[in-house]
Image 1 (cartoon, rainbow, N blue to C red):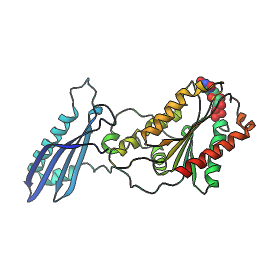
Image 2: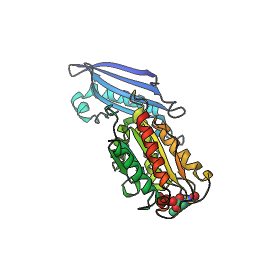
Image 3: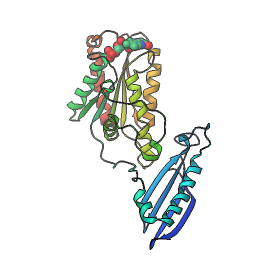
Length: 293
Ligand SMILES: Cc1cc2nc3c(=O)[nH]c(=O)nc-3n(C[C@H](O)[C@H](O)[C@H](O)COP(=O)(O)O)c2cc1C
């Protein structure tokens, strides 16, 4: 559902022989985060947006006296005063307008996130089997290795909810682009201390930016998601956290989860090679996701 937008302040003024309109709006993003409000200040002239800034209530910790609504209202007043005083200088000082929302393009291909830092291990096998299955169906398959990439951990600044993009300029932009366009996302993860390895968790957390971007667009679901996980110990309880993390990741992006494939008792590199039926299971599951997706 699109967030409700209400106008809080509006100013119409003439400066330097042109008519301008400044409006400050408030959106309720509680469906993303409890109580989150986003404020936008937009300057336009003859229907064209000349300036736009956003701020949101999650940017300001309760320990400061700053509040998003006050910051936006202060910006509105400051813009009005500056525009009236010196329009040329003001207009040339405006920050670039954030480009929110990517073009909605047809979904294609399979993205595989190989979350184990161990080269040639069990997840590497799962990832290669998933890629083979996708390619046999004529789908493009791209494998990303979070541990080999430059992925800064999310710092929870929530500025992505203002711009739709992360403040960090690293390898995540390409991964987000691939995932947002894919028909199927396969997450391969070993169990590390009951959860997912650090590099994979960093990648997952950074998808907050795509979730934020989705608050600017009407796009709903984005394909299917499949978890392939291995654990050294025996027992399905070892996958509890990994399933929860992958489930939260898929849910954040509106991805429909398929039944995961979870293999316990796999500790040594290549242990999985002794279980040819798992390869077949992966192929069947990838096929089903692509037929349904
Ligand atoms: C740092 C570390 C932590 C691990 N923690 C667990 C664990 O909590 N539970 C478990 O069943 N296996 C654990 N394992 C074992 C791995 O899940 C297992 O070796 C798996 O096959 C590794 O996958 P890979 O070959 O794709 O790297 C751990 C391994 C490492 C290196």
